[in-house]
Image (tube, helix red, strand yellow):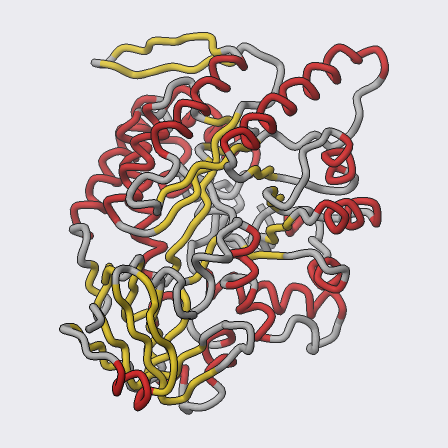
Length: 477
């Protein structure tokens, strides 16, 4: 007796043989997959109180978003297209304009968006902007973890220090009063360790903590040697903490020369996944390969406008590459179908070659390769017996997905998040027929709106909602 039996679907297993089973079934028991195969075979061996008819649907592992930012769900498009205004606003919001309830409301909203688009696991940095991490105390991080847990998806919450020098100014807003404080690196490090101890492995193992340290792109001149030594010392302290607690290590914003520098600093390894990674040098690619460090490509991000992550070259060098959304701000979504499509065409245009990045490889980048990048390959990323039951059903019986053939091509090239019908995480049905079962969607969205309004009031940020002067009728801002 299984708990759930999914039957009659096109099962895209992403297993080592990359089997696609036209009339396939998946049996789930105790939160794990207990059988995958033809419907006739699995149905003969398993019965279940809940049977999901997957006829005219694709059944595949839940998608994985390997890089995004907590907080971004409530700061979308602020500044109206002026990147400098957005960065400045985000730095202020995250350091002094946000409350624990801001982080909770945004976590629920972003997790809900991911869920409805079929993303069952997501990485979120607890902050953003110019490396503004909200780690002056554990409470913002804990409230973020609470929000994700309520929705029910998996999360890797990345926490770490801000960019030196220190101390940094943070503020809490209590009963209409600002309470500013100066926060040292040591205090931020202590907050990170507290979050590991309190929340790593929480929510029945669905919530994990990773550590991060700001990317440093170039060596400083000799006259600033003391600053170089401080950066190395702080980076080593965070990396040592990640290794002692056996949690992942990640960095946001790598570009030309910085991966080779990170190797020199002792930051790389198979438990490390590095985001953006644009305009890499041969030495960078060699360092990633040598240390088995994983790369996260964010094709829809601003950094991918400024430079290209050499994804085909990295893959051909034997480096694991995953995909990330980079969060939902300033101007993108959490829909990983959108980012798969963007990834293919971004690199095909660069090489002027439509054979670059086949659909199957790109699907690997949000399933099995992403699971490997996050150190979760034994648990998620494919539909195999013994793995966690993170499963999504994509409704193929729609005009833009017809005809019902070549299902991998249909899913990668034509589907979008709104085509996801059913989502299961840990063997629990979180969405059925597009209806979320764990939270009240309206309440989540209304709470997010309230917190956004309150945040803008705190920072006197109403002007950030206005479009720029050249918004209409011009070719550029």
